Image (cartoon, rainbow, N blue to C red):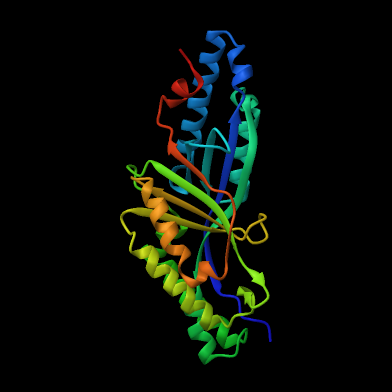
Length: 270
């Protein structure tokens, strides 16, 4: 029999967009035109964030190092809403100066490894009794503040720094995550989660699932007051067996949140 997948809960859809800014074209514009584009950029991003209300948010981060100039991060309640955000940016004059270099689509996720393993001990997997018990556990988890914070994340305002990276679980030889018994996966993820809990209050972590949506299987977005916390938590988690044996990681983007008025400094508004 195939290994049993964990039940999951999903919340907001998420889109991470990394862009280079076309500074060559920007320098050719008259100062008044540059100011108009900067004003449009600030107005558009403020509108996108404000209009989302309780159903999501948008923010911009100035990327430090290689890979991109800025990253826009959007959370919305539906894929349709994310598509509208993406289209509004493309249609803007400001959007014409943005060169896409990377994007990532996912949906915030809470994996119910423990509940799935527990129910599997009492019911035949996928039987009516199993499905009813999983639904009961899922409803209880979805009502908890901890899980709602994971599904509908709002990092503390003072956490200005961001680190984003995609990851997948390895499927190679003896190190195949997807053939492990669900109880073993639950043990490994519990250990991994305990490492993350030691950074509570220092790092705000958002896990989003992208199986069937993008090339990797999960996206990890970290927020912190101190960027050194990213190095510390990722280093420590690499030693957990869930990562050291089964983790595969993509490229990292690290940046600082662009505050109101920051577009002028970034794009030389004068």
